[in-house]
Length: 68
Image (cartoon, rainbow, N blue to C red; front, side, top):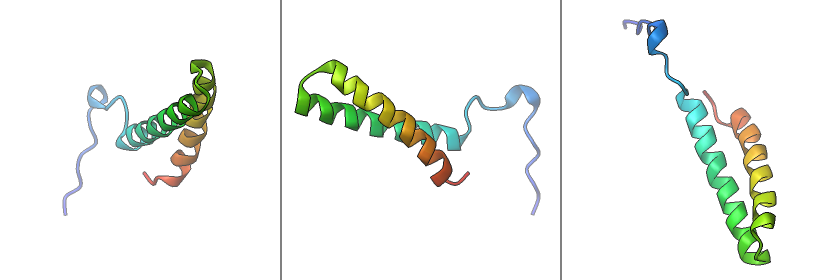
C-alpha cells in the first residue's frame, strides 16, 4: 500500500472531519435542549440559558467520545 502524502501547507482544511462532526452533533443537542425548554417554559431567554450550556457540555463530551 502506498501512503498518502501529507497536504501542502496552504491546502490544510479549516476543520477536520472529527471537529466538524463534534460541532454539528453538539449544535443538534443544544438546539434540541433549547427548543424543548422553549416549549415547556415559553421564554426565549430560558431556552438560550438551557441550549448554550448543553452545546458546550456536549461538545466537550463528544470530543472525548467520538474517535478521530
